[in-house]
Length: 252
Image (tube, rainbow, N blue to C red):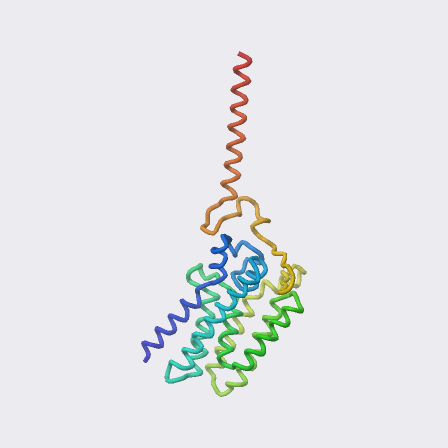
């Protein structure tokens, strides 16, 4: 049984580390980390790529949390609420610190929602509906994420108040999500936080468009901007040399 627990824990991390936002960016021929806020997560995909792709990203990330929370809840130790939260937390850690992209992942909101929706289904669904309503009314998305994860953490700790492991894992998830949003708090205080609209058009602060040529790289890491500048410079130099040669011939 211990072997299966270890295998499940490893699988939770590596599946959790699969970043749908990055995959969506590649499918669209873009580098999501060079667009909008630069975060490879649902909110940034919604702003920078589109609502349909954002919904797909959210569904996949949420499903990861649901899947491993269910595995822990019903397939480990004959049904364990402790392992439900352990595997769910590991999945969230994988999402936030993925080995595939040098530990630079998303902020874990959607995956955390998936975990809590298994732990406390009715509350989870209600909070999800509340989050959607909030995003329809307000444009500062991360505040809604904060409120949702905080409400779910409190509810989970109260519901499973006799399980130390569940409480600890819940607090670990909450802490990770809060820490990952520190940049949002800083931007909000400076009045520079990105906005989000679920009904209107989103004006994505495309980092690619604003970057200098040497900062523009494609999804494979090639510096297309710099290469383009070099090619243009070479063309100009060739033209100058050609004109100079023609003038010398005429003079002679």
